[in-house]
Image (cartoon, rainbow, N blue to C red):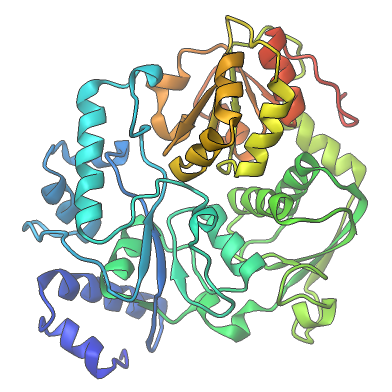
Length: 431
């Protein structure tokens, strides 16, 4: 039995329209399956808009009909024409840059269909941001605030760095919540479920963004299913940019939704607070050897020619682009290399205003928005034989989708490869 408020019962009875009724009915069914006894109010959401390839299973070019069948789970067409007025909803990445498509080998038809999907979402109240980094656009949930998202990294970033509340619910459930403003009060939405379970002691220096990225992956690969890691040890020069990279790689190597970092995340000011006074169920010491093993599993052990360099997973912030522009000034990208920087369109506009965009483009690079290589799909990434990334998530994703050589490095190593046309970086973990 789900305890509903008067307003929630009115929605379920259809007094606030068929769309809200359907969305809440799905949420109530979801809550029953989970064993939740009540719902909680959602005030922020990121949703997966656009003409994504998973929608092709219904082979329908009508966005409203496709939305009803796939995201609402009904055969009748229920227009997606509103979201909850109290929910700040933004769109996550989509399948193409809104300003171009030929650069990605994407057809004009797919490009235009994507714009139709985005127009539908915008008219329903979703703010079209098209980014995996909504927090760079003002979408920042406060500590204790409940939200939903379709981006795994945003789940861990929100729960861990902001202290807000979210479960990894999935694409359809996020849409239901954005429409009706509710989600099951379960999992990470319940304060007592947020205690750490396993201690991770970092026994090797971790300072650079790349090292934090690798650290997150090592934690995820050594975290028992359902565990909540508490991280302490030799972490240096910690900042938000490094933590968001770490939280992203934790999320994609495990089912982790919350990662406490002692002294840096709000629910882990001390180790005891992170565990809520409970004893750890286990402890893992992260060594130099573990970091090296993970890196060498990710980066191919060759020094071949490369033809594709991608920087920006998660999407770049303006300081990241400033750093890249400074390094590329008066340099040229190898004519055989495609260099793509990935960000959101507000950040790209800032880069243009500050002159960074001109420097990147003069060097031969591109700044793309709204998407990323694996989201676009094989028509884009399938063209290349040697690919370089600054992100563990991107390397892991593309290793499963490409036969190309995959290389993993920091921004400087990526740019050096783009300039020389060859991967030659050497890190302390290399064999």
